[in-house]
Amino acid sequence: MNNEAPASTAALQARIADLEQQLKLSDEGVSRLAERCLGLEQEVQSYLAAHPQNEKHTDSPALLQPTLYFDAGFGFSEKDTLTAPDYEVDELTGVVIATFELPVTARALRLDPGELPCCITNLSFSDDRVLCRPANGLTLPSDSTLFLDRDPNYLLDGVTHFPAGMKLGVSYHYCPLETLADKPLFNTVLEGLRFCQKTRDSEAHHIAGLNDQIAAQQQAIAALQQQISELHQKNAEAEARRQAYETSLEGVLNSSSWKLTRPLRRLLGLFRH
Image (cartoon, rainbow, N blue to C red; front, side):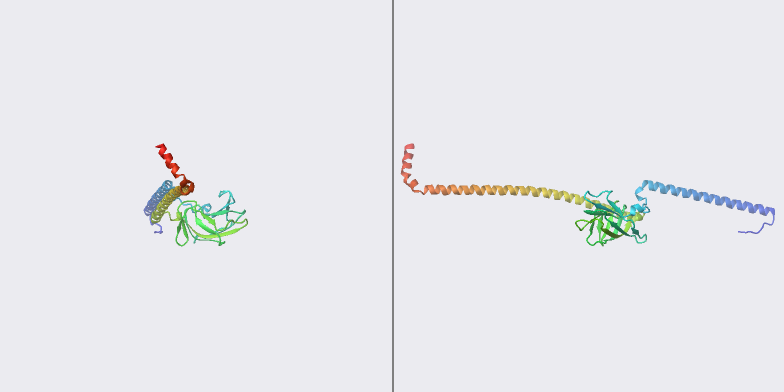
């Protein structure tokens, strides 16, 4: 930009006109930029309204906080839950470390690593006796679990009861799936996994139905076998009675009285004819 003083009034007026033109063009550019930003914001709002499932919730700590449910004899409920007061989350690696202390003796425990669909790896507990199994997730190789739906949870067992005052430490690597929701390839794979899970659940339901049919058929077979056994028993009793009758008849026919009265029976037979 030329900052030298103009040599004449005409040059000064030309300079002012040039600056006014530049300012006008600058204002028009700012207006177009503001309109473009407003349009983009409206597009984002429309997209989120049409696809509420794609809205990110990973900034909400409550949705990522580990929770422990304990069954004190009345089943699992929202009243019987524990949150670790000093749980740690490494935002770079996704490692979560938490410690829970049971207020009462519990029959069973349930661990909810968060409220979002996620992938859990490297899950471990401070007590080696504690075993876990995913209640609503897919078990993957390398001890990983994929939870495709909200409210992922593990059922914990391995001991008959968990005493009051027991401290249970847990650590795992937590990867919420919503952080990858904008990637088309990931969404395609995720839909495929969900389809596989639905297929597996449908097959499991079908297998359960077949098992029920098999159990009913086995009961019918057992009832038939019981009837056959009873018929065999009745047949054996009838056979025993038949043999007893035959033995008794043979004894009568071979007796001396039967032989001595044979002429009399023949004579009676002649009179009857």
